[in-house]
Length: 106
Image (cartoon, rainbow, N blue to C red; front, side, top):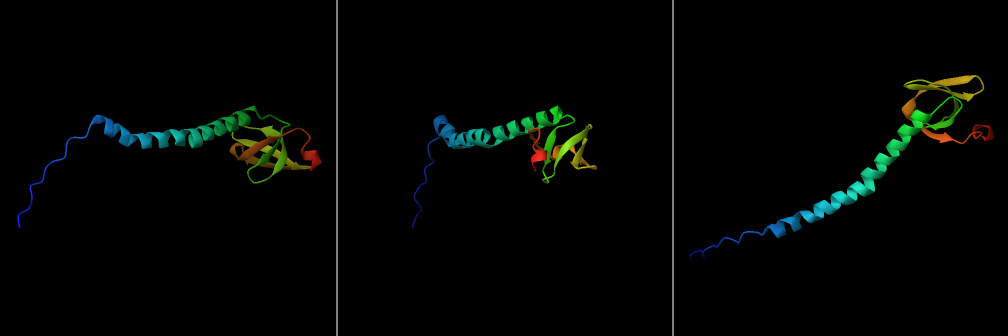
């Protein structure tokens, strides 16, 4: 009828608390090397490509337009997508630089 006496658990050691955080640390390290680091590298390559872009380069946009760069501004680029057809697009929409002469082969 009576409740038995409850005893307090012994204090956890510092070693067990570090072992509790070890899986979180491993997950963070894997997350960094598998997701964050490659994403930062791709963003840096994209930024360098946009800075190095010049008149006469052949590019493809995110929307699939392929054209030759006619004019490079600070925020916009003029692309010639056909004979006497020039469109103005924002710089960040440029996805890839193509090798010279690719557009003539299309």
